[in-house]
Length: 203
Image 1 (tube, rainbow, N blue to C red):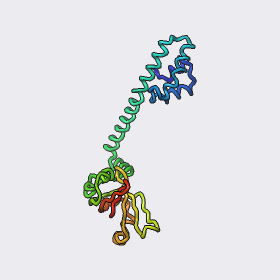
Image 2: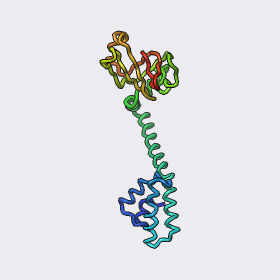
Image 3: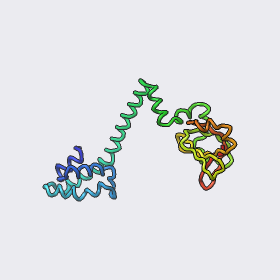
Image 4: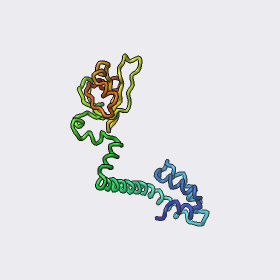
């Protein structure tokens, strides 16, 4: 089947801009989607140019069908190219490949190695009950010490599944001051506390 946008221009008199809008609307091919709004103009344009209604309706139906599989197919092709390129880089330039992975999210690789492989992920943490002892690890993405919190630090660690909310009391801060100041990836032991659907780890 020729490109639907080309059919719309040649057979139904669509302008280039209108044909592009039709192309963009194709993923939403169902009755309430954007593509259906072009049906009247498409069929009317073909009728004005002497084409039979049956042909016009059949062509529009084919465009709807193309929208149903054509775009997922093109996405699959794109993913296939990305997968091939990733495999090629991993084979020929492993150092650069793993460096890129670390830049994307280091926990995705560190999780497979001790002691990180014994840690509870952010996704798993929500299923645990109160007062459970856990080990968590992640990239430090935020630290706050509000003036009204009596010196308590609220820290956010991000792993490959989500965020951990960590509470660090003042007496613990003095013991691990340098680590808390400079650490980029931390492993923390603590107790789970859930209140009002918000889960914290008390270090």
